[in-house]
Length: 165
Image (cartoon, rainbow, N blue to C red; front, side, top):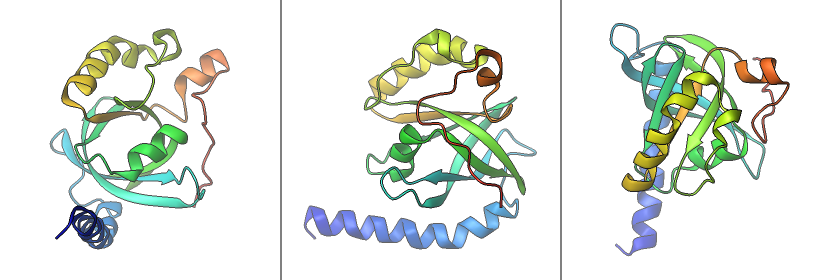
Protein backbone atom coordinates (compact mmCIF):
# COMPACT_ATOMS: atom_id res chain seq x y z
CA UNK A 1 0.00 0.00 0.00
CA UNK A 2 1.26 3.44 -0.84
CA UNK A 3 0.88 6.28 1.71
CA UNK A 4 -2.27 7.69 0.06
CA UNK A 5 -3.98 4.28 0.03
CA UNK A 6 -3.01 3.78 3.66
CA UNK A 7 -4.44 7.19 4.62
CA UNK A 8 -7.68 6.38 2.76
CA UNK A 9 -7.95 2.96 4.45
CA UNK A 10 -7.47 4.59 7.87
CA UNK A 11 -10.13 7.21 7.07
CA UNK A 12 -12.60 4.52 5.95
CA UNK A 13 -11.90 2.41 9.05
CA UNK A 14 -12.58 5.29 11.47
CA UNK A 15 -15.72 6.36 9.62
CA UNK A 16 -17.15 2.84 9.85
CA UNK A 17 -16.11 2.50 13.50
CA UNK A 18 -17.71 5.86 14.35
CA UNK A 19 -20.99 4.79 12.71
CA UNK A 20 -21.16 1.86 15.14
CA UNK A 21 -19.92 3.68 18.25
CA UNK A 22 -21.76 7.01 17.81
CA UNK A 23 -25.32 5.86 18.66
CA UNK A 24 -24.05 3.92 21.68
CA UNK A 25 -22.12 6.90 23.07
CA UNK A 26 -25.02 9.26 22.33
CA UNK A 27 -27.25 6.95 24.39
CA UNK A 28 -24.80 7.21 27.29
CA UNK A 29 -22.77 4.00 27.02
CA UNK A 30 -19.19 4.36 28.19
CA UNK A 31 -19.48 7.96 29.39
CA UNK A 32 -17.40 9.47 32.20
CA UNK A 33 -19.88 8.82 35.00
CA UNK A 34 -18.32 6.39 37.48
CA UNK A 35 -14.76 7.19 36.39
CA UNK A 36 -13.47 10.55 35.17
CA UNK A 37 -12.50 9.15 31.76
CA UNK A 38 -14.87 7.78 29.15
CA UNK A 39 -16.41 8.30 25.75
CA UNK A 40 -18.32 11.40 24.71
CA UNK A 41 -19.77 12.49 21.40
CA UNK A 42 -18.85 15.91 20.03
CA UNK A 43 -20.71 17.69 17.27
CA UNK A 44 -18.63 20.11 15.24
CA UNK A 45 -19.48 22.33 12.29
CA UNK A 46 -17.39 21.72 9.17
CA UNK A 47 -14.99 24.59 8.62
CA UNK A 48 -15.57 24.57 4.85
CA UNK A 49 -18.94 22.86 4.30
CA UNK A 50 -20.78 24.14 7.38
CA UNK A 51 -22.22 20.62 7.84
CA UNK A 52 -22.59 19.15 11.32
CA UNK A 53 -20.35 16.18 12.13
CA UNK A 54 -20.55 13.91 15.16
CA UNK A 55 -17.42 12.20 16.41
CA UNK A 56 -16.98 9.88 19.42
CA UNK A 57 -13.84 10.76 21.39
CA UNK A 58 -12.20 9.67 24.62
CA UNK A 59 -12.47 12.40 27.24
CA UNK A 60 -11.31 13.14 30.75
CA UNK A 61 -13.81 15.08 32.86
CA UNK A 62 -12.62 17.46 35.55
CA UNK A 63 -15.47 19.45 37.07
CA UNK A 64 -16.97 21.63 34.35
CA UNK A 65 -14.05 20.96 32.01
CA UNK A 66 -13.59 18.05 29.67
CA UNK A 67 -10.25 17.26 27.99
CA UNK A 68 -10.09 15.53 24.60
CA UNK A 69 -7.06 14.87 22.46
CA UNK A 70 -5.88 13.18 19.33
CA UNK A 71 -2.59 11.85 18.09
CA UNK A 72 -3.82 11.55 14.50
CA UNK A 73 -2.68 14.59 12.55
CA UNK A 74 -5.47 14.10 10.01
CA UNK A 75 -8.35 14.36 12.53
CA UNK A 76 -10.81 16.74 10.93
CA UNK A 77 -12.75 17.39 14.13
CA UNK A 78 -9.69 19.20 15.53
CA UNK A 79 -9.55 21.55 12.55
CA UNK A 80 -13.31 22.08 12.75
CA UNK A 81 -13.01 23.02 16.45
CA UNK A 82 -10.40 25.62 15.57
CA UNK A 83 -12.82 27.23 13.10
CA UNK A 84 -16.03 26.84 15.14
CA UNK A 85 -15.44 26.42 18.90
CA UNK A 86 -19.13 26.47 19.90
CA UNK A 87 -20.15 22.82 19.97
CA UNK A 88 -22.67 20.36 21.31
CA UNK A 89 -21.61 17.23 23.06
CA UNK A 90 -23.36 14.20 24.50
CA UNK A 91 -22.06 12.88 27.78
CA UNK A 92 -23.72 10.07 29.73
CA UNK A 93 -26.76 10.30 27.44
CA UNK A 94 -27.26 14.06 28.01
CA UNK A 95 -26.80 16.77 25.42
CA UNK A 96 -24.79 19.83 26.48
CA UNK A 97 -23.52 23.04 24.89
CA UNK A 98 -19.81 23.67 25.26
CA UNK A 99 -17.09 26.01 24.11
CA UNK A 100 -13.88 24.38 22.91
CA UNK A 101 -10.46 25.87 23.55
CA UNK A 102 -7.88 24.23 21.28
CA UNK A 103 -4.21 23.89 22.14
CA UNK A 104 -2.34 22.73 19.06
CA UNK A 105 1.00 23.29 17.38
CA UNK A 106 -1.04 24.40 14.34
CA UNK A 107 -3.04 27.09 16.20
CA UNK A 108 -1.78 30.41 17.55
CA UNK A 109 -1.72 30.57 21.37
CA UNK A 110 -4.56 32.26 23.25
CA UNK A 111 -4.13 35.55 25.07
CA UNK A 112 -4.44 34.28 28.64
CA UNK A 113 -6.78 37.07 29.77
CA UNK A 114 -9.38 36.00 27.18
CA UNK A 115 -9.71 32.50 28.64
CA UNK A 116 -12.06 31.43 31.45
CA UNK A 117 -10.29 31.46 34.83
CA UNK A 118 -10.03 27.66 35.20
CA UNK A 119 -8.46 27.33 31.74
CA UNK A 120 -6.10 30.30 32.31
CA UNK A 121 -4.43 28.36 35.12
CA UNK A 122 -3.69 25.30 33.00
CA UNK A 123 -3.18 26.91 29.57
CA UNK A 124 0.63 27.30 29.75
CA UNK A 125 1.05 23.61 30.61
CA UNK A 126 -1.37 22.49 27.89
CA UNK A 127 0.40 24.64 25.32
CA UNK A 128 3.81 23.28 26.31
CA UNK A 129 2.56 19.67 26.21
CA UNK A 130 0.88 20.24 22.85
CA UNK A 131 4.02 21.75 21.33
CA UNK A 132 6.41 19.14 22.73
CA UNK A 133 4.24 16.09 21.98
CA UNK A 134 3.01 17.53 18.64
CA UNK A 135 -0.61 16.68 19.51
CA UNK A 136 -3.78 18.72 19.76
CA UNK A 137 -5.65 19.02 23.05
CA UNK A 138 -9.10 20.56 23.32
CA UNK A 139 -10.58 21.74 26.59
CA UNK A 140 -14.37 21.79 26.52
CA UNK A 141 -15.92 24.32 28.87
CA UNK A 142 -19.23 22.76 29.94
CA UNK A 143 -20.23 25.60 32.27
CA UNK A 144 -22.47 27.08 29.59
CA UNK A 145 -22.29 28.24 25.99
CA UNK A 146 -19.37 30.40 27.12
CA UNK A 147 -19.22 31.51 30.74
CA UNK A 148 -16.52 34.05 29.93
CA UNK A 149 -18.65 35.57 27.16
CA UNK A 150 -21.37 36.38 29.67
CA UNK A 151 -18.85 38.20 31.88
CA UNK A 152 -17.01 40.17 29.18
CA UNK A 153 -19.38 40.29 26.23
CA UNK A 154 -16.70 38.53 24.14
CA UNK A 155 -16.71 35.07 22.63
CA UNK A 156 -13.88 33.05 21.06
CA UNK A 157 -13.33 33.89 17.39
CA UNK A 158 -15.67 31.96 15.12
CA UNK A 159 -18.12 31.05 17.87
CA UNK A 160 -21.57 30.41 16.43
CA UNK A 161 -24.34 28.83 18.54
CA UNK A 162 -25.59 25.53 17.16
CA UNK A 163 -29.31 24.87 16.82
CA UNK A 164 -30.82 22.54 19.41
CA UNK A 165 -32.27 19.29 17.99
